Length: 399
Image (cartoon, rainbow, N blue to C red; front, side):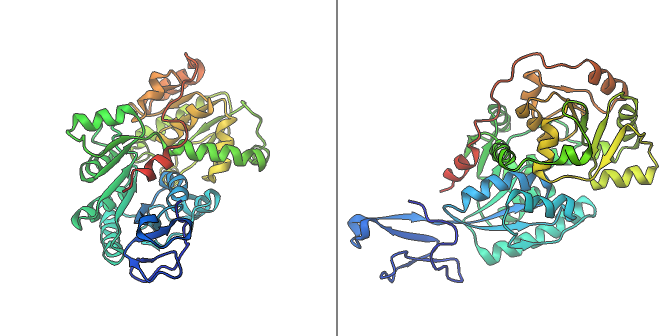
């Protein structure tokens, strides 16, 4: 029987008292659970309650943490650290509220700035938290600057690192995310992979210890969202005046597309050339570039602010097609049964391409328009990235 989060009297140094009120025993980060009320050593089992510092900072990490945090807090004590990498309400606050995530215990407020500036602020802040909390594990997700800073800070202090979504590779080192994920994987002690491909990528780099294929925790969250949407249907289509299968959903946020004027112009030219409605959920950084460069967006492309997770999934599930450079949305499109066109020349989620439901076109207007007109999934969908119970597998591997 596992203790629930918040149960029992924690003391200031993270130790937990025995749950038997008559027992004076105190064990650091352990809980003594007595069987059938007996106090003898022969009928007691000791179950370790660990302290885990979880680092999040960007929208995809909030989604993943929504699944893992719920499971983690059933058994252990979690300190949720928000680096502040995504700091406005549309990219942070609304996601915490919509996903049922607890309020972060720490918010570093790292904000924007260059990669070096942002990572440096995070590195210093995470180190201070680790020195104060002295956790059993530091948990990181994905491939952001928050991921990199967490891995670096923990490894310098000899705090074991668990990386959820380990082993992904685009094989494009011009991507900041690729550098982040490579470094994080080589510093991690427990590497939890979403697929066999990810585990093979690690093996090719000589990483074989501590590697486990657990599936994708984002599927856990999507299943949770689908259940919520049955009982509490989203009104996003009604709000936007949309009909199912009568629009394309688009997102663009990757640095190689937003920071390259030619790439972003090509993508927007493609949107402007289409003869059906494009609902473009615009990342704040992308909107700034569009405004600064005075890039043309015609009346057929509707710019909307980022949505909360439930509304976004309702919008995605009813789209005829998805245009994106987001890794997460590629997977969600597959699970939802919506064809996906990826505006990048490569993807970490290559299984969706092999399955015939995702096509890579790069930031090329002619290729994008041609794919919108002609791309159709070629095969029935098969299960990808687990069965929706990845979070429990991740937590079970912490020991």
